[in-house]
Length: 262
Ligand SMILES: CCCCCCCC/C=C\CCCCCCCC(=O)SCCNC(=O)CCNC(=O)[C@H](O)C(C)(C)COP(=O)(O)OP(=O)(O)OC[C@H]1O[C@@H](n2cnc3c(N)ncnc32)[C@H](O)[C@@H]1OP(=O)(O)O
Image (cartoon, rainbow, N blue to C red):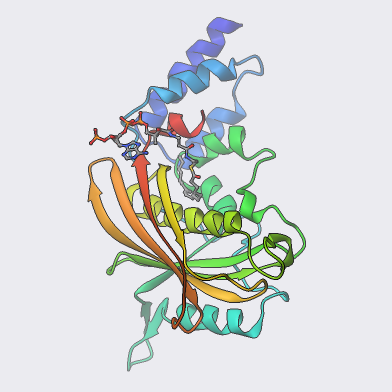
């Protein structure tokens, strides 16, 4: 039994490092023997240092996309969403529709499963797990946000509405919730730029409190990309950009797919 498990492990590792399509990964998992030793799969995957993946390959179909508008969104959230969304597609004078400078990213939970290799990962990570910012089922109660990236300018912006469950000081957003959204936005931006990453360092300065229920912008931009290190800076501002709430720098280290399973 164990021998067959190890043999399967080797097959999976070989196929993943050859960057086979997601469809094939699905077939491998479907045919996997029930007695396969998950831990040996994990430790073998950890040793794959050379899996290369397109940084952010999205599918247009799949489970619920949590970054789309819902009735809990305030008019300011909806307005900013439409502002950036309108720049995801531009129309030429001849009426032809072309890709614009911005790209709206579907929510993580949806994206991971549809990334190359994600079919494999989803078996381990996604059965019950979900990015925790997307775990509050009641719309508007927690983190309502949508992330856009600008490929040319290597910037990223998130429109964020903080719900009542994120309260810290009375009527204000908890500092940990602010750290969470900054980590998620910069982490997403780093992953978009550099592939799978882990946060190594996040240094935050809280400059002015964020009123609970308000809509703010989270901006992320590239400081430096040096080998495995992606350094980003991040600011949370009021929706009109006039007030700085929080600023941070984040260091993200590129990791192999195996590290994500640890
Ligand atoms: C098939 C799948 C496709 C996936 C597609 C993805 C889609 C979705 C993507 C994204 C959405 C994400 C949205 C959420 C984001 C949230 C992210 C988090 O919250 S992550 C959890 C919190 N972070 C941890 O738990 C890390 C714990 N730490 C570690 O695991 C390690 O320390 C790690 C990986 C960070 C580095 O370990 P090492 O062994 O790999 O590398 P070493 O050799 O230590 O460091 C490499 C270089 O980085 C520097 N470095 C490392 N840590 C540093 C630090 N804290 N400060 C400064 N420099 C540091 C080192 O000095 C070294 O630099 P020199 O190459 O020598 O120049």
